Each structure stands twice: as C-alpha cells, then as structure tokens.
Image (cartoon, rainbow, N blue to C red):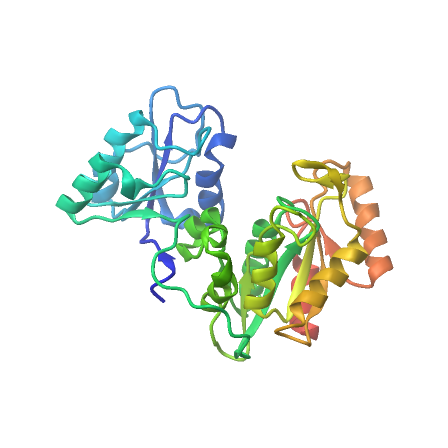
Length: 339
C-alpha cells in the first residue's frame, strides 16, 4: 500500500537538545514499545533527556546496522532547528534514512533535499502521507477490528491500543497495531497520520490501514480525537466509518470537566460517548459492540482508582482498567472470549 508511510529499522533516536524528558517523548515512546529496534541515541550539547541508550554518531550507528534516524524530540512550533541540520546531514551521508513527525517538513529544506538526492537516502515526513488515497466504500472486509475511542483527546488511545496488541500477541492471537498518528507510526514503522489526510479520504485511509485479513486476525486501530470535541470530531468519525470496528474501547480521563483546550465545552458522559460512537460505527458494521473502558487514573490515588474502576464494571457490566497503572488483561480476555 503505497499510501502508507513505512520506516526501516533498526533505529537511531535523535534527542537533539531536548530541554527535558517530556520534550523527547516521541523517542521515549519508540524505545518503550520497540526497545529491540533502538540501537542508540544522539544527544547534542545541552540535552537534558536521556533514554539510557548508548550515545553514538550516525556513522557509528550505521556500522552497527541502523537504517533510520528518528527525530524523536519536539520544540515550540515543531520546526527543524538549525543546529540539528549537521546531525541530519551526517545521518544521510552515513547511509541512514531520516524520519520526522514535526510540522516542518524535512523534504522542503533545500540543504537536506540536496544531500538526500546525492546519497539516495530518504527524508520521511511521517505526518504527511504520500501516495494516492481513495475515498471509503464501507465494503465488508474479512478479519476483525478494534478501535479505541475517547471522551476527549489525549486520554490514552495510543497507549491502550499498543497494550492490547501486546496482550493479544502474548495469548497467541494474530494482532497488529495500526498507527494513525506520527508517534504511533514511528513506534511500529508504518501507518497513516490521519490528521494530515484531506477530510474526504479519512475513511478510505482507515480502510487502507486495515484491509482484508485472516478471519481470526485482529487489527487494533489507534483512535484519534473525540466525537464530542468540536475541533477534532471529523477525524474521529472518519476512523469509525473506515476502520469498520467489531469492538470499541472507551478511553477516559475521569478528573476532566471540559474538553481539552475548550473550557466552555463540558466533557460528555460515558453513556453519551457510548451512544454516539456506536451510532456512528453502525454505518459500516451494524454488529459493533463496546468491549470495555481504558481509564487514565494517574491523577487519582490507587485506592480511589480501584474503587472507581470497580464502580464502572458494576455499572456497565464490562471490564474497566488503567492500562498503564494496572493492565489490559481483562479487556483482552473478554475480546477473545466474546468477540
């Protein structure tokens, strides 16, 4: 599928001059989920982030088998800083591709374009898919699909999806995480960043991400946005239609009182979230069901978190857990037993 961004591993993680660990969260996510594919890190003077990987130059990484240097840090405005350019040039000249999820595109910087053309190495802007996408059709596809949805943005949809993929594979199930955002693409090496897809083609992008497959295979599709968020509901709807999910996991952060960035828009109830997502998903899969809840309880004490999750399970009669604090074992077990 030429429309998918595809990366070659192993990786060299570029931390640049990240001011703290949070600024290098993309690199940290790749290292957390795909540690065996991360050979080393590049840190410039003043870098305060450290993934405890071996510090090495691009040339040293290439000699050890690295194939792509990932720009794993971010800055204000998402730009390629001038003091990063020598390292990027060095990586290209060492025989590495260079991938970035920042807003500024690598392939529009003349210096890098010239070196890329001379060396034959790729400049990969994972936020900007290339190739020709089709509009969605709603045609029934073989295989099974799970989509993470949320009461709001930034409530753990990517982490939950990756954790479910890992849990299913541990149980011997055929399962693949399907990345729809730039960080997810860097973690698994392929995907489509749907927030950069023209609106008419979002459902088609989701169909391309999760094509026909074996009857017992699960595609775990990374959700984006929220149907209740005025800014991002469009991409959420496109994913619901295109991914044709058999199962939905509702992701939630219980201490929020309004939508992220919109203080005048209240957070929807779980009941409203379930109803809206099931209604939208039924357009392409009338048999879709909610599997359970993935709840970010990081702002609650453990006792309060466990009590809240117990209450959710009793109230909705389905599993509820915090994938980071506890696990997704109950969600995976129900998926394999009942879906």
